[in-house]
Image 1 (cartoon, rainbow, N blue to C red):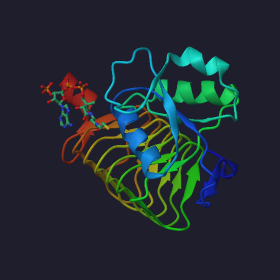
Image 2 (tube, protein in one colour; image 1 turned 180 degrees about the vertical axis):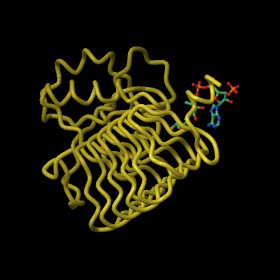
Image 3 (cartoon, rainbow, N blue to C red; image 1 turned 90 degrees about the vertical axis):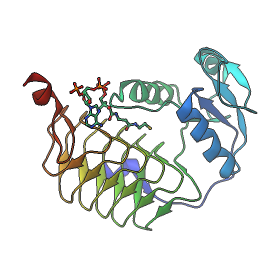
Image 4 (cartoon, helix red, strand yellow; image 1 turned 30 degrees about the horizontal axis):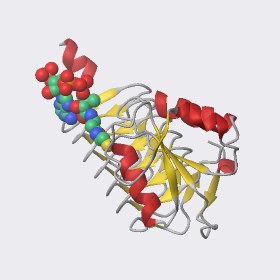
Length: 226
Ligand SMILES: CC(C)(COP(=O)(O)OP(=O)(O)OC[C@H]1O[C@@H](n2cnc3c(N)ncnc32)[C@H](O)[C@@H]1OP(=O)(O)O)[C@@H](O)C(=O)NCCC(=O)NCCS
């Protein structure tokens, strides 16, 4: 992500209608953020109307977006990721290519230092905390109660899961996932596409596409092979 892809927190513009993409658990959470921000939700799109989104109308499959003029409504990605960010990345790129806007969403209970920079479509969820100098990538998720401490750099489409803690100056590569309740000590680098399992304590760098678990975290592939 280049510096031009990020912005410091600006006052909310007048909220437009938002269409939610997806009807599962992450969509439920994003619907709540939209409600907390007072953003009207026109409905959600998903392959079927089987959903937990009470009170939000099902508009049909993604195909209905072909009839939505970009700019007449914002989109919000309600598709999360757990260790594989490819669908979330693909959807973001597709909708941007069609000219749709996906605004940054910050739950009102999240706490962000004033110097934090956020990429397009980044989502900061209930009770998350982001400290001074942190840069959050395009379409990244900082999930419920996660802590991203000072000067961390979170890659595009990366996900810091609920309750995870990144100590200061951690780099998280594009599409990486730090699992629920995991901890990463200061100054480390987690590679692009890497997965840190839930509850892990990471004490050494993780390479691109690496998978680590445990306390202290070890290479899951090596553990399986031995
Ligand atoms: C790491 C993870 C992806 C593994 O999932 P998986 O590939 O389906 O793996 P399995 O459940 O088949 O387990 C494989 C092995 O890893 C172990 N394992 C799985 N998750 C583990 C974890 N978090 N910590 C330590 N060991 C773990 C299992 O015990 C099993 O060991 P065994 O082969 O000795 O029995 C998953 O457990 C995880 O932590 N996901 C992140 C969850 C998360 O962040 N959710 C947030 C959603 S918003």
